[in-house]
Every structure is written in C-alpha cells, then in structure tokens.
Image 1 (cartoon, rainbow, N blue to C red):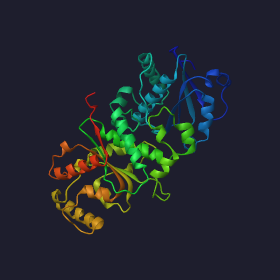
Image 2 (cartoon, rainbow, N blue to C red):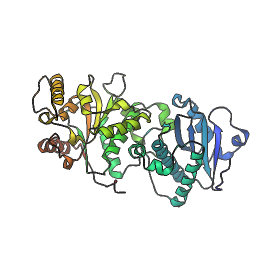
Image 3 (cartoon, helix red, strand yellow):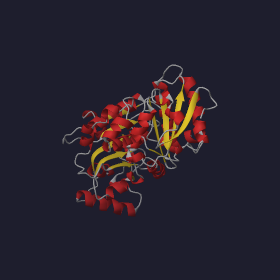
Length: 388
C-alpha cells in the first residue's frame, strides 16, 4: 500500500504465515533500514531493522508476542540508521502515552541524537503518526497524547545526560554483589528536574533486567540503547541475588495519593510493572515480606513518629514500630521503615521542600545526604525540564 506521501510507504502484512507475493519479492524487506509496528487490539511492539523478513521470523519465537496479529512496515527511499532509530523512539513514546495498548518493548534507554536533515524526517514522522492513527494503531491525537499524564510519566523516555549518568551508576551499585552495610542511594534535585520520571524509568529498567532472556539480547535489545551494555546475565543474576527464584520484589513509594493513582494507571499499561508496585509508606510498613528494592519519590515527605495528624495514624504508627523494631521509640521515622523493609533503597529527594511538621527534620536529612556523599551514593539533578 503506497502512502500519499511519495517519500515513504506503509506496508501492512500478516504477522504470521506466508508473506504476500509482492512483499516476498520486495528486496527492501530483506536489506533496507525499516521501522515496524506489530500489534493486536491490546498489545503493540515497535522495532527497527535492516531485514524485516528475518526479524519477523525471530519475533515469531517469542511467546510474549504470540498473540500479535498485524505488522506494519515503514520504508523510505532515504532512510538511514539514525532516522530509523529516531522514528522507533518517537513511536514507542507516543504509543506508551496513548495508553490504548500495552507497549511490549523492553526499556534499555532510547537515544535522541541529531543527524543530517532531521527536521525534514520529523515532519514526516508526524504524517506517519496520522496514518497509523487512521488505522486505529493510535486512539488519540498527538496533542492529547503529549498533554496526557500517561505520556509525562511513561517509563519510555529520553533521559538527560545527568539522568542517564545517575541511573547508570545506581544500577552498577545495585548489581554489585557484596554484603557491605551501606546507606540508601540518593538522587537529589529541585522541582522540575525529573525525579519522578527517573524513578519510574528505573523501576521498568530493573524489572526488564530481572526478566532478561537470551532472546531479549538477540532480538529486543539494540546496541544503540543507552543501557544495552548493562543487560547481561551476570548483572541479572546479581540483581536477583537472594530472591530464591521468586523474582524481583520491587516497589515505588509515593506519598501523594493523586500521583499514586496516576502511576498505577501507567504501571497497569506497562508489561513487567503492576499497579500493586505503587505503594504508600503505610503499605511498606504493613508488608509481611521485605522488598528487594524500594524507590521512594519525594523521600523528604517521609514522616516522624511525633507528628501524625490523628489518633488512628498514631496507633498505626505504634503497631508498625512494634512489629518492625520491637518498640515504639519516638526516634523511629518512616525512613527507618523503608530501610528496614528493603535490601536496597533509592531515595528521590529535595530537602528544600521539607515544609510540613510531619516531614523528616533537617538533622535527619543532613545526615542522610552526608552519608550518601561519603559513600559515593549521591547523585544530583540540576537541569530544569518542567519549564520546557
């Protein structure tokens, strides 16, 4: 099927079975940069390759994609590797923000690089989006997606260099196989520096690493992904140490109820993640099993024993302290609950936002940051993103 724009074609073919004769004979199906979308009514996968026929066969072997039915291939006379990667990234981000289907892609980081004539290609991407929307691959307009909470909180994001550097170091520390008693990992940044996005991105990346298979390395991961080199079986095994075959037990703790509800919607539409991973600090305190990793958003909002808002919370605080520590010492904070209930802890903090009487006090925050600095487990985010 030739598109109205002569610069590219959008070919629709069955995901399984024999290819139609005209597509079987098309040399560019075997030797040309291409981007493809495979979907059904509930799931979607996006990829790029120089051999559609071979890649199609590889995907057939993946049980996660067994229910996909339709494959759409974008070919362009002047496609190159950079343009194909850029279109792949764009479609993954837009589909994750659309929320109509689960995006089956792994999250190993997506690079956003400049290349020759990129503006012209990106104008074409907008046209490709509209074609795919006309074929019901997308359910909403570009403007609706870009302004949606799903898009803003999606784990499929292009990171800033400082976000990428912080996450890379954090993952390296998390897979370090040692028993040294160290404090939490800390990511510190002001409003609008992308702390929450980093937390969501990290959760998805860790789950994908924990579920890594040989087929993922060969088919679903590309050396062009930012974190490709970290997706090794040695790192996977180190991450899963002590899990005894049950899989990684991970949670993201979110103090704000409204944000928790938004993140649960994101986690519900993201394979590998689940709404039950989005927690309040009270959920953590009540948990019968320890977590392998807890990521805490706005960790400066964790509370003190002496500053609960009502009697019921005071009673609950007492019960959790008694269960976790055997006493109700006033010095026990909710940060202590977190560190008691997890093997590894990643805290996203902005000490300057500690404004409520119930928040962690300045002395506790100063001690936390000083230890993180001393152990080289502190990372700073300074680039302002929200104003953009």
